[in-house]
Length: 243
Image (tube, rainbow, N blue to C red; front, top):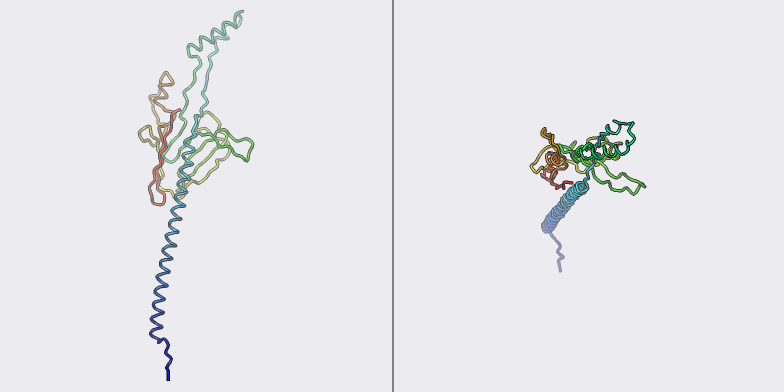
């Protein structure tokens, strides 16, 4: 007589225990791989945001242009000093020639093309054409501002006036370049680091525009931006060319 034997209860419990341990180990491996993939994607997204911000800054800094309207004052008092003279036209030409030779036409030196403070950088740059409109502004004003733990880019259209500090028409187009930014700080290199540009210099009374420009440069040698993003300190530096 033959007896049919099966698995005992102990064997079933051992087999189920081994299967449970393999399942837990496999889930831990899968969860570790999934977490690593999420961390890699998170770092890739942060790197993409940093690259976009850097490329936007690089493009803006590379298209900085001078934007000042020099004020010209013509001293033509000599033209009206002798209205009854028959040779008034010839005398007017001679007076204009003499005035030109004696620098009677006074052109004020250009103001700096950029303004830098601890939290703001302002400058004028070429405007990118907008395909949605038939005509778009030729130049725009761009501000980079650290505010509310964000790096904000502000763009103003239709510049008015002869200085970078003058008002622009319309409302600025704001775009958040980076979020969760702390310890943001701007600085200018003259070439020494400076928290402000242009600097207040009382000894600026010179007779020539060249000397005035040497003491008050129109652009710094470069600008720097330091901040902390995702607990990582970051410093960007951009070189500028003097026009």
